[in-house]
Length: 223
Image (cartoon, rainbow, N blue to C red; front, side):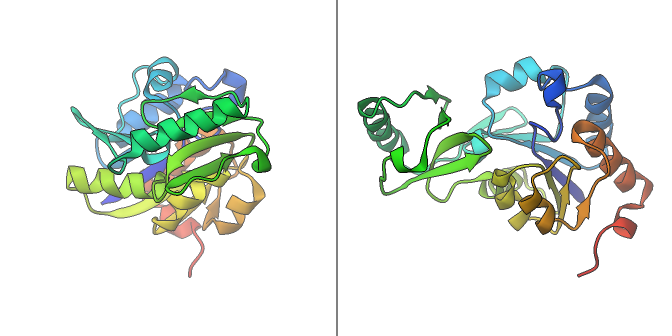
């Protein structure tokens, strides 16, 4: 079984479209999900997915960088015991340092903050993605979130991870094949088995067409 795990911003969606999924991308993912597995794996909150991806029906969602899983009709908070008490400590620290943040259902989001300004608290990880920082429980990331989602849904298969940014590296580490869209950052491209010649959602459409036609393995690097 093929299981595609794809980032959202600048992978499924295009910044030029204000990150709203194009109809042709949505339709291709929905078609693919009838035959194989497709997971949207993103740092985004659920409320943004509802606004930016109406009608998108993947196999499952791994949100907030692995901390929230939507598997069918089940919602799973993928965080360790005591996380919300720990998160409150982070909030107190951030407020004391005058650092602005927003809260998801499980994680915190920061923008344009310097590394030296971040508090150091055991059990807390600050994961950077371009100009943004996500405040997560240690040991939780996109990769671990995807594996938890697959376990919860009883799915096994060959994982193809596709992304564009630094925080997709953890997704690459749990995949058998790693794919970067054309607009990906160079460090991620260097990890990839395949770099697509199209950007964002159009790259994802090309990838899914390769898989559906049986041509995917002809295009990846041989290890």
